[in-house]
Length: 431
Image (cartoon, rainbow, N blue to C red; front, side):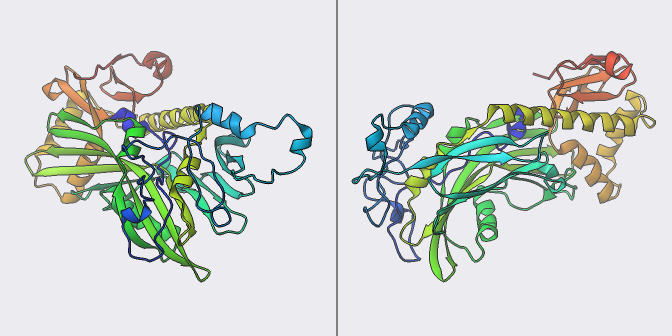
């Protein structure tokens, strides 16, 4: 659970994978994106096509050919950057050149830290115009204060690729409010999410087809989990998908692909009043590509996607930022509750009364249950009812202080006596 909701959009880019678009009409299915040998970027044995690409531009030199190159990302970068040793030969373009020229596109975080920093890179065709980057703002509080919003466009504007903002939302069936900065949404599948954001990305977009993307889930590397709790269970899983779209731009019929992955955390609890469900969803940046109808080469765009690399320096700064924000939240909670903090017995009794008092108003029940069921980790606490206590799963460590209060922290060096002038005991996760 901690790995799922601590993950950010740095893990992997959701991809649009496939082959050249051959259907010129509006009504076609996934098979229309197959050139006869491979379907959606996999070979005849079902294996994903390897990184690397070469071939002539579609139109003058026929269809874009997707061909593997030897070596991993580092070798591919070296291949792209190699220069001919003969200066005479390098003085002009080869007459029979049928390859593609690429350059490194840098996704810049211009305002997150002391100075602009490259957040990630990927190779884009030479001469394409890039814009955007990592964007920060109070409106992105739910996604730790920032989102990706970056694009690259061909010189004639006919083709493009983009990383659309990552998102996070919640839903429940008991009227609870969302976490600070987040919103409530009924979206409960990656397909619904893609169908919702496609028209926002390209106004008037029509959904032509959809398919699941289990290969993207495999890239993420997270397996589904299910954990029993004293009153229910907690489940986590990833889901990925892709939609094919059609839209009109400047009088020209266009085609596009939009794909992403969504991580889900679902808690179910029952206190004698029926199942209470809370669902939290976090999407990675959606990967969108476009081209005129009949020219959408999904294998080409997939090859570009596979060159995406995160800057480890920026990634480390982001991890520090998230840890700092968590500490601020903890410190703020301690200060707000300092005067009102009571003994552990009083807190336990209040919790028990809340669970059992069905005559309370629905608003009070929703608020109390919403605070408890937004995602928990069970810890051993001999003084708590049943010998365990449920606390937020968003932190690595939990402490019980001598005054009966609890502290959650991601700081491995946290010491309650040094930091809060009060002694306490670190709690162990219930096995």
